[in-house]
Image (cartoon, one colour):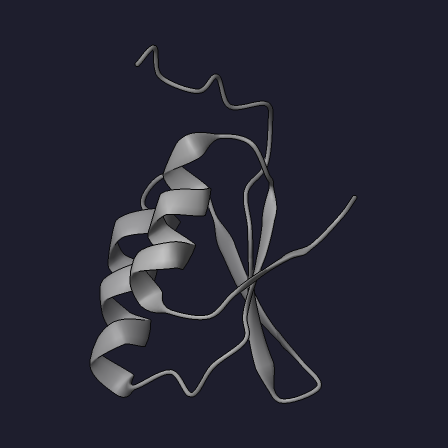
Length: 69
């Protein structure tokens, strides 16, 4: 599975909400507040957060259907 790099919290949340990817690497310096905001919102929906090479990776399980725009 391809891991998409996010350069900001808002970009990471947009990628996760879009349903187009199941792994997002937080490729920036994550503040504590940002980390817990993301963890609270996405772990409640079944996401897992891991740390690889000093960066956080958010993984979504299952197939997400993107919303109709």
